[in-house]
Image 1 (cartoon, rainbow, N blue to C red):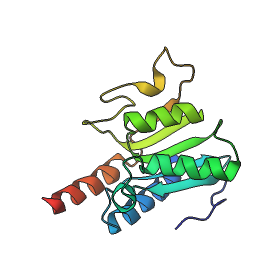
Image 2 (image 1 turned 45 degrees about the vertical axis):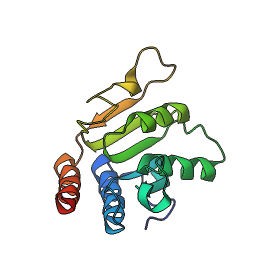
Image 3 (image 1 turned 180 degrees about the horizontal axis):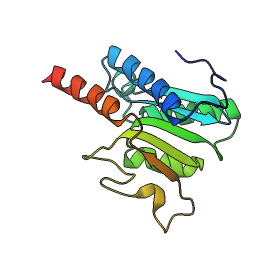
Length: 158
């Protein structure tokens, strides 16, 4: 869906979050939980993804993990310093751990996850003082749109 290198230096958080929402919509079209993510460095998209846990039969195939894996392969380095991760839902503990390991500088997300968010809702992994890396956080970008995608998906499944 997205092309590597897409973007320009004057795009802002809302512009990138709109692209993450597109990834979430593609996941929903594939009957996956509609969460999308992309990793950006200096205005260029290094990795992107939508949830694929069902399709891949892989509990680790969250959108954030897929974007990180793709970017690491593309860059030839598991350290992704200086990057920003855009994701439509607050990352879970697993994804927060991967974000720390990758040394992502910043996370921008849409909706809070009251049942499993590990950024500020249930846990505060990305800013925990005992960790050797802390991540700058911006929350609430396109929050309503991101939340509605999830609500619509789960309402249709009930």
